Image 1 (cartoon, rainbow, N blue to C red):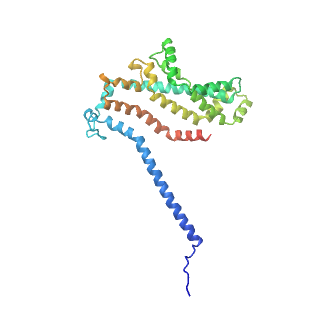
Image 2 (image 1 turned 180 degrees about the vertical axis):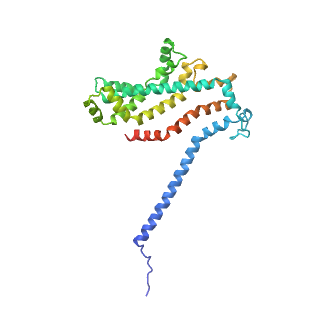
Length: 297
């Protein structure tokens, strides 16, 4: 008599344990792949920054050496001394703060006013005006540069902060961005304030703006950073180094024949980045919260 050996069936707890272990291995593998991908992307993003930092502390002989080296063998501060001796660097930094800060302040004021009108007021032609504003986003910036320069020149605003700031006092993207955020706010707040006798400006100032702080902070940081890093605008509207910004001032380091002192240039770029890094570290938590809040709304 023969007996057939059959594989014992797994009990439900054993099958569940094996399934859980398999899922756990898959989770660990996917987590490891995500971590590797994150490290690769982070290294690709940080490599240019690392090169700037290390090159800023290299002597000229190592900057121009071949084959190039990543880290300096001799650390020096000569590039930082040169940047302050060859350029009015402190003045350029101050001009950048005035330019970027002034544009940001004016843009927040005018963009929020225009966005409030488009989002909360019903008037004839509002939809047409919104379409025009959105359509202006599709016009290349370079296409309007020459007419704007001609207007600024006719007003005598070349080499002035008025010529740098006022043409950028309002921005189509900022208006559209704030309008979309204002639309997400409940209109009951406006109606309650109007019933209590508040004027339209009081509704805007005391009701809408306090609830739009996340959007205002997000737009303000983006506007400040974009104008701080802008090269073409201050390069066109300023012809004297005393009125330039830090980005346009770095172009003056180009020597005869287009020779660029790389070490000095990297030192200047590092100093130019520091205020933005400090600003981000100061407001990073609030900035992340504002971006998340803006996205959720």
